[in-house]
Length: 445
Picture 1 (cartoon, rainbow, N blue to C red):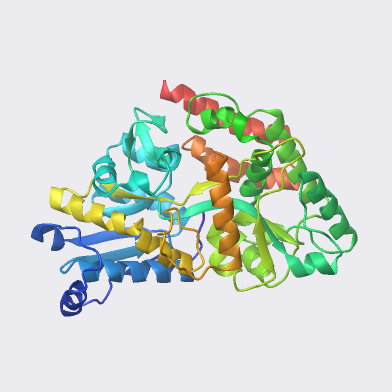
Picture 2 (tube, one colour):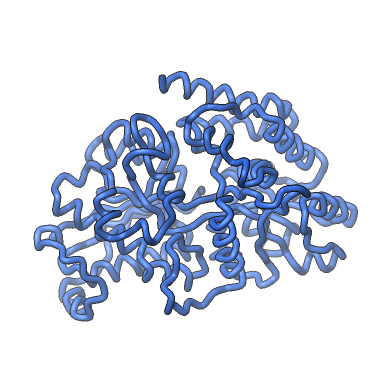
């Protein structure tokens, strides 16, 4: 999930004296060796939004306070910047010891293949991470001999992610439009809004991936969780084809919306992040995107969040999503003490304490909250937590299509503008995805 703020490098000004004082409180005790505690930790993350960055900085300070001598050297990079620089930096020996890394073949899979990430299975056992997150969620960080979803585990995430439907209650009410309960009702609502001169969808396609999320979310909302095997096979590189009726129909519908005036005027020149800000300011009735925008969206009390309404006949619809980029340990953690302090850092980042901190800031944690936790939940986050519980109970948590091959995100990004402008057909759009995927499968053999 993309970020657009400028890359920043932060060395917290947190003195040893203060750290020792805080350590007396024994907030988090991991029994690390003195050698490990003396390490500086170079950490890269993608939390570049203001609200997210504030949480990370607080968590880093808390970790330092509990580990005298440890200094976090933080670098925050956008999603796209991370994709461009992470593998090169680690290969060159001047990258992070701990990093966020995008799941899927293009990033985590490629780094595992080149020996640039270390397995974290020992820390899963040591800290009991498998009790905090489900096996199906942890499987999204597993790789073995080029196979996705199996083998050793190379990361774990701190935040849950769901792509759903943001809506503006006031705009819908003023237009006399009811909140849709089915996909068919959503289509009817869009027509009513357009007739009244209200932009049905906020969209921005100049940067980031709102259109990709829209196409994927619509397609996966038409899949019942009981029939998810075909999608799982595609994402985990087990075979299959993107060239399906469902994918073509989803691309066709989005193209029709783009060509038919259902998107905010001038969307072609608006970035995804700017489109979100326009939506927050009261422009557009709906926006399809993810829970990572909760921190911004909560500033407008008229904004709500729900799953993409399912068509009739689908009882357990899937939702695009999963978890945010995984925390991982790179091959630059050369010694066991360094690896152990890195494991302890990641443990705190996925702890119940960290989950409560994220929840208080309005974000959806991947780790369940402690039974006695009393976070101040926003209405948006309450909706997200209930959706997260339902999706996990129904085994209906879907996937990001770009995880399916190392070059799939670029292929989609290159072809999405052509699809929206009508310069290629929906069939050609899906065919480009499938050609990319089939080439990847062939290279794996």
